Length: 153
Image (cartoon, rainbow, N blue to C red; front, side):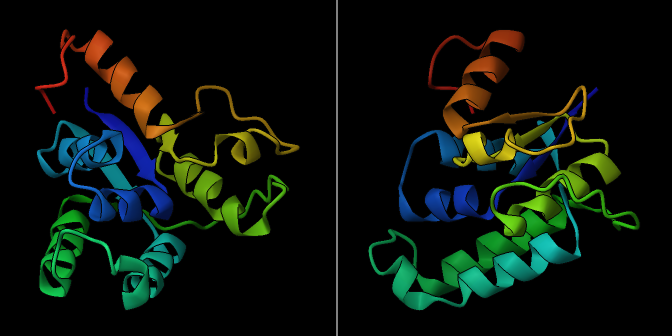
């Protein structure tokens, strides 16, 4: 069974700003359908907002058109998940609550984020839902899928 993930906007941005690294590897896993990324209304709007900030991508190796094409490709492989119930896990940053709500609604096992500490700080706990950095996610993925080197994914 393909692992279902929520990719935080910050990880998507990091993948566009650097030519390599774990954020780019996680993005590649989703684009090649090795894992199933999910998206919902709030995450989509956040991605659209961040992608419109051209100054954020001043040092990106990708052109604006390439970034737009990559976002379109990403959204094409994502499963759209409606969120009907707001859990309000009361995270330190209110703006992160939607990530947990999306993960619960979409039955994702992992939220891939650089903001692991804040996502683990909520009042509600959801067994079976982990928050991992891109590096930790890739290390676990490689171990569980028999890829010990960085040349895969």
